[in-house]
Image (cartoon, rainbow, N blue to C red; front, side):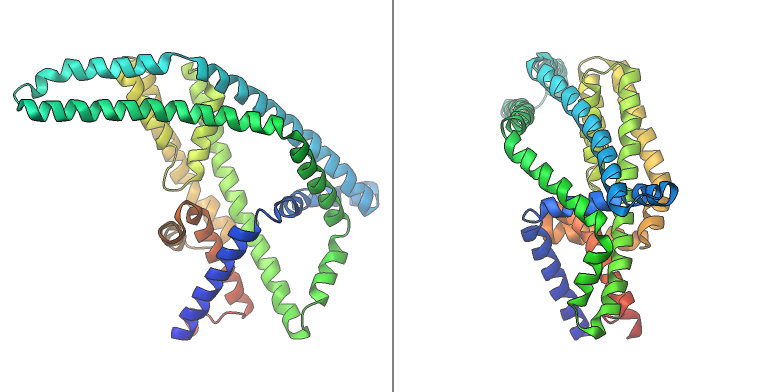
Amino acid sequence: MLIKAAELILILAVLYLAITRLLMLFAPFLSAFLIAALIEKPAGFLRKRFKLPRGAASALSLMAFVLLAGSVAGFLFYRLFIEVWDLARDTSFQSILDRINEFIDMSGNWYAGLPAEVIRTIESNFEGVLSRLGDTAANVIKSLLNGMLDILTSLPQVLLYIVITLVAAFFISRDREKISRFVFSQLPQGWRSKAKNVKDDLLLALAGYIRALLILVTITFFEVLAGYTILGVNYALFLAILTAFADLMPVLGPGTILIPGAAIYLINGNYFLAAGFFILYILVTIVRQLLEPRIVGGNIGIHPLVTLLCIYFGYRIFGISGLILGPVFAVVIKSMQKAGILPSWRSS
């Protein structure tokens, strides 16, 4: 039992170091591998349907991917930049804070009977919270603008990254079988079958996990984008992206954006938007709870309770990154146990 626990801890440590330390170093080639996996089916269709050579099919599929992804990314970046720029010049933040101050002043009768010392303490704490809230909002917007401007000013590095990624994706797609044979030929004979089983099972599970996350986040994005548009909310695309990103974090969820938004509109006297945000939060949560077990369970083959435990302990051990790394570690361990590299706990 202790040996199994030690093996598990060692593998988790190695995986964590490999992912956190080597991820950025090999980021272009990891991105290339993901792109090659995405265009594999279209390239296979072109080879079978039009009898094209593998290189030509990979090149055409990659060109189609670049055109589609580039168009979508360019449009989103443009719209997001415009909305964030407008938001940075918007004075509604100060009006909301002023409204909150008015609300606090109006509620003075509620605690008028308290000692003066207590009242001064409450008011000073509220002022501190409001000041930090305003500073935080301003800093977030400033950081977003600076990040976008940094991308624009670092175009040579970005273009170099993109070129390396696309060229590597082409070669990975074209020479997929040769690369696979070369890698497995470097392993001892006794390890090749096990390594192949781990690779197939692991890629299938990890691809399923990523696909499940992307499906859920995409559904949330279009739900809230439609909701914001129907409600007539300003900066709908920006808020939809923020909400979808929050939905990617299991502990945060869309309520991180929708609930404070409803509270701010309620305090500001806009009861229609406050109710709309609250109803939208309920709808998004219901849809997420109905779809998540089926989508995630069907894609990674791990029990929801195990996934929840991995998310919790991953967060406790590794912080925010553990929210994503926890289930990934579970998938890796499950694949290694299935291939016989790690002993199964069920055998004890």
